[in-house]
Length: 217
Length: 330
Image 1 (tube, each protein chain N blue to C red):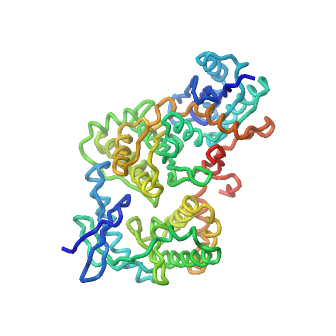
Image 2 (cartoon, one colour):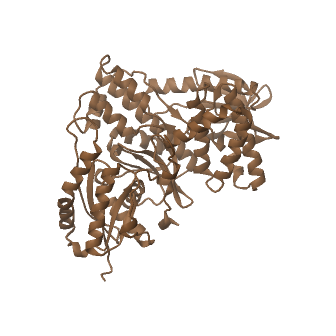
Image 3 (cartoon, chains in turn green, red):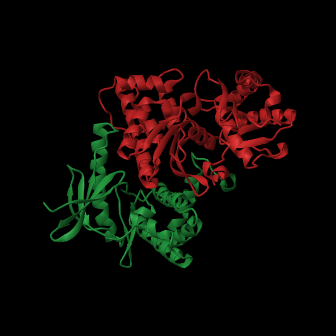
């Protein structure tokens, strides 16, 4: 067994830096959560692990850069994958000029468009899950993703991105979101219309919104 | 003028008509409430507002009495201006405007969700916690950043408390249903798989409620109650853990009507010890809807000049938490 070094203890999983066939690799281990029912816990960790492994590979086939999966251990809820040694987009947004910001989020929008067009939603779009590396934008963390072409699921995906921008990057959230939408529309074409209308509906639904945004139901 | 100020707070967003008095020294001097309990089914906005109108004068009198004050001692009036049910909000606002006009004192509109956070900060002494606010109408995970309380996670459809209350009624449990649901769950043995829906940092409870209600006739109600609570609390616990990892706040504050759930408290305190964060539960009388939190937050707003003339003291049933500029924390 190669040496393992704990890189990050996230909310859901622990990430270890290790080796696979002489290559730097990441071991992602979904750890047991003591606060929830053991049956429920095992079910959640198991499905998310196999889900993530599948979607990482499928997304890459759609032209969305993702880590390469080396192996999956469903029993221990572990995925071994290639290591992308760079900080996430979240850390970089603050230091971006407006042109750089617009260009980056346009590409993020295109990336999400390609994913949606290919029948996949990510389920957890945030700037922490996008890693700019060697000229590409890598998308990670597919545990909450699914195979679907539902307008609703696509809408929630976009809604999550928008909210992540508002909570973590409120100074630039409007500009970033506009560029993101531009890129998304570029790839999705006329398909984007229904989705974006649904995003507004999701925002209005079950949550309190600014009255000025409350257009026709 | 007396150097100590006394702010009267009126709460009337949903079931509760509350009247509390806070002093500028940070004391909640009295906190009186009268709750509308529907004879059957959920809350009826018009009936609730009629209840509030009929109880307003008496509740205010008791609040003044318990605080040892007279109406002449009140230096400002605050009211819940939203979010909430329109008819209920308008009743509370009318009461507050009347007091303001009689006393010729400032009138301060307060955001109900902000008030839950502010009174929690006051009683726990935590300056900058992550806040988990769970009630019949709200499921919000929020933290302060850049002048506002930002929303890090929330429900995509119905609130946690709404899901649990509705299911409890479905089982024929009388109000308040959640404690009885928890008792049933304590005797549950078998876990029944139910829809666990986490989308990013958000949760969804409508599918869970539908599925659990559908199974109510077929499964053991103790097992079903156990499974429903495990799934419902598990979802909010998961998004809370994500928010605490993301925001790196050193403390977590649990508030709202569902905060009194021991099962939810156990789950969240578990997470806090994992992430070395302090865990606080706001005491029940201040965690549920109440006038004291409105009074205290009204005082904070008053200090920043946030009072409004009666003519423009509108209510806003859809007033979002993250729209409010939290001037007193700048």
